[in-house]
Length: 350
Image 1 (spheres, rainbow, N blue to C red):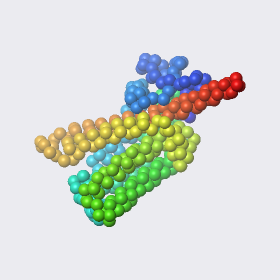
Image 2: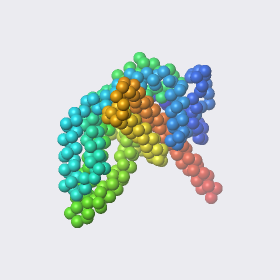
Image 3: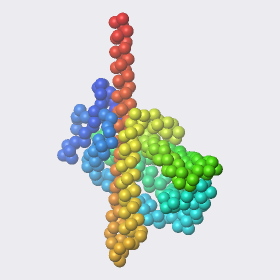
Image 4: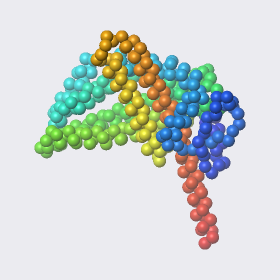
């Protein structure tokens, strides 16, 4: 896999600029010679490239979704492992903290506390699934994307051998990612309580406190989105490059420089898609608001498949985004080298 990646990158090294790799039609041989190259892409181009890769290697990706992603989605969407009493207890505690900080208990505050509690408890209870099946599905998707670019067949036995070698560092990297996310969320909660408490002590109205909380939430959303982009790229890096843990996080933060806007658009699209499916599941399956409930028999599995497909596309786009960032970095280095040569020539003329 690493040889395939390096081979693809070296193929375009002699050219002054890399352009996008186009997946050939299904009638073409993956090993056929071509002049395909790669260049940095925007979010829409990454989505199109992802669809091309999906069509080119449809069987492998559908197998990954069926065996590794769907089981996690089937447990995660209906919150099968979540104890509702724990969620309610945590929600009450968060509401008490909010009230003591001077926040008015408006509907959006109650809903935010409820959603945060559900997410926290669900993430804790489903952590064994995330660090096994979910992590394995990410690795399988990245491996399949790399095989597509290197014009190699996706071989299950080869993937198993690769995972035996990479699994330890992949788990270590994932634990570091979880630590980063927990630190971000904890910092947000502490900062939010500190800001709201300060406004409350200074005598500002509860409504002003609410506006301040919304502003802090918006700023945190941007910071958290950047953290998620770095974390998703870190997973890809730990698979395709010989680096893991904090080194992979630093490498990811350096790699996405100049491509942060593209990553934010990808994150926004994936979040909207996942939230939309979650909302449908909540309305159509969890809370029965119409009919006799017989539609749950087919709507539930359908929404699980839809959710799994969005997760698959998001993971594939993260892998393509990595290749795009690599190409962007190479283009930037080539541009600097070219400008340096021009400056040297000008100085020699002087």
